[in-house]
Length: 115
Image (cartoon, rainbow, N blue to C red; front, side, top):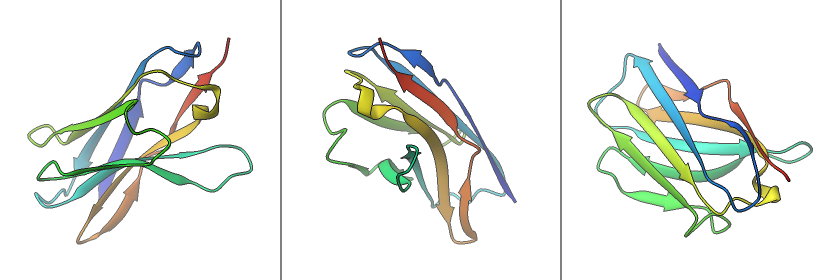
C-alpha cells in the first residue's frame, strides 16, 4: 500500500506564490513517476506536472514557466512551486504516484487564487 499526504494549499492573491508538498509512504519502488493533478468544479481532473525518478519533468502548457516540480527520492517527497498564480489556477490539487503496483492518489489540497 502507498499513502500520499499533500500540504501547502491555501488562499493567495493573483500574482502570488505558493508551494505544495506531498509525502509518500508505504511500499514505494525506486522507479516511479510522481505528479500533481488538479480539478476545478465542473471540470475533469488534469495533469499539472510530473517528474520521473530520474527527474525528467513534464508540464501542462498552462503552467509552463510558472510552476516547477521537484522531488527528493530519499524522502519520497514531491513539491510543486507555483508562481505568478492566476484565478484560473484555483482548484483542488492532488498528488499522484505511479509505479508497477498501480496508481495512487492523495486526498487533495485546495488552492484558491483570489483578491
